[in-house]
Every structure is written in C-alpha cells, then in structure tokens.
Length: 227
Image (cartoon, rainbow, N blue to C red; front, side, top):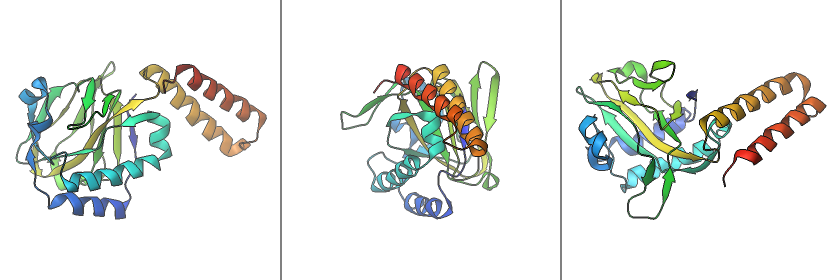
C-alpha cells in the first residue's frame, strides 16, 4: 500500500523544523548507505547524531503520534528516528531497495523496515525534478508532495529520486516496523478502518452495525498483530 498523508507538519511546525535544519552542517549522504545504495546515491544529509537532526526528528515523531491517518495506515510498533536529506545541482538517488533491517548507530535500537516514509519539507514549486518514484505491481508512481505531507510506501519496493535541476529538495525520511508485517493484511485493516469511520459519520459510533464492524477490525488486528 502506498498512501499520501497530508499535513503531518502544520505551517508552524514546518517553519520550526526548517529553522533547525537549514543552518546545520550537511555531509555526504552515503554516510548511512549500504553497498548497493552507495552506487546510486548522490545527495547530502544531516549527521544522525547532530543536535539539529535529533531536535527536528523529535518534533516529527511527536507529530506522527498525533496523526490518526499515519497510525491507521502504518500501525506502528517502532519508528526509526527521522533522518534528513537534501538534493540540488543535479543530485539524485537512482533505483534501489531499502535495507530490511535498520540499526541506529551507536545503540542497540533496530527495526525491521516494513514501511518507508518520506516527509516533504520544501514546497514542490521551489525546485524542479526531485520526484520520488515508487514501483509496484501496477507500475511506477511519481510523487512530489506539498511541504508537511508524508508519503508512506512498502520498504520492499524499488524506488528512486529524480535529479533536482533547480532549487533544493529537502525531506525527512525514516522507516517503520509495523505491528502487522504483511502488507496485504495491513491494507485490509486500513480499508476496513476507513470504511467504518466514513459510515459512522452518518450512522454514529453507537450504531449496532458499526460496533460489530469495529469488533471485526480488532479481531483481525488481534489475529495478525505482532507486539
């Protein structure tokens, strides 16, 4: 499942986040690359242990915990602390797949990367190129979202970032270990949850059918979740 989640960061939070990271020291993006990615990746990123990255990352994690859409779609068990990348002057990230296991440097924190996430931090009209292209069984999907919006997609998918030919593309990126490992099961739960909430607007949360369907949702989650 690939889903865009609007407004994860509101205007005030976005401004604060950019103020933290814009003046920080950026390094070669291959500082966190695996062997395959190092051949394909040309960008810059904030050091994982920089104070700016930690502070901005904490702000994003707090925003994610308050986003009902993110929680419903990802069913997060663990979220890797957000990292930050920058593309300009033709920089790009050719087609690659993310590592299955991500380990935070200098700690024993590790996750299975079920989902990849890109949080856009620059407005799309401020740069040319930089589309995130994700490939699935239906083909390739190129995405360029508004600042503050998040794209969530399977970490197992092939994806790339097109060269940025004007301006500067700035994003946060991270990975999620979901309580529900299987993407098909997770999609089913999200579709069911979305349908329940839509119907409940008309019929009310105390409608017997809504209560029964909510029970079905939680029984499926109980069957599939790993916690």
